[in-house]
Amino acid sequence: MSGVTVSPVAAAYSPAQPPLPTPSPFSFSVASTRWSSRPPVQTASILLRFLSLIFSFGSAFALVALPSTNTKLKKHPELLYCFNANILTAIYSAYQIFKNICDYAQTCIFISDTASDYISFIFDQQVAGYVLISASSVAVPLIQQMEVGTSLRNASVVSVCFSFASFLVTALAAFLSGYKLCKRIMW
Image (cartoon, rainbow, N blue to C red):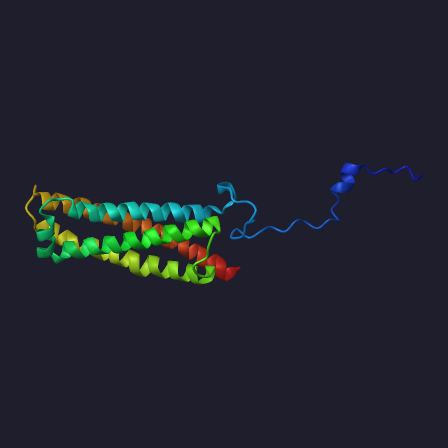
């Protein structure tokens, strides 16, 4: 014998073995469906969509919660625009939550992942973001003209605050959609 012995532990960790490949952050095993096995981007997307749904629904609800608001909304098209913009954003957010949960559970696929990333990015930025900020900015001058202390003015202030919060959350979701789209294009 040559006198050189190699322990089984050292043989197992020899540098001649190739390293294991690193998986993509957008791929995961079908067998593993635990929350911790999903990419954090997908979990953050669901959370942001849920917050956008809550804020936009709260903004629309603040405008129609008053008993005599229906006739006053028809007199003020700015508030009606704010109401419609928030309802549109709530519907879009609910659809995105449903689509993300179905993708998360891998039960069904509505559209391909690439098309979904493009559509989400465009709708987050152009439709939801633009409509929310324009609706809020249109309602602010009307609120300034209203008499202080009226119930419609108070409801309008609450609605604009919720609408702006929904815009901020939608802007974060747009950044996340842009990140996912860039990662998809680069991979």
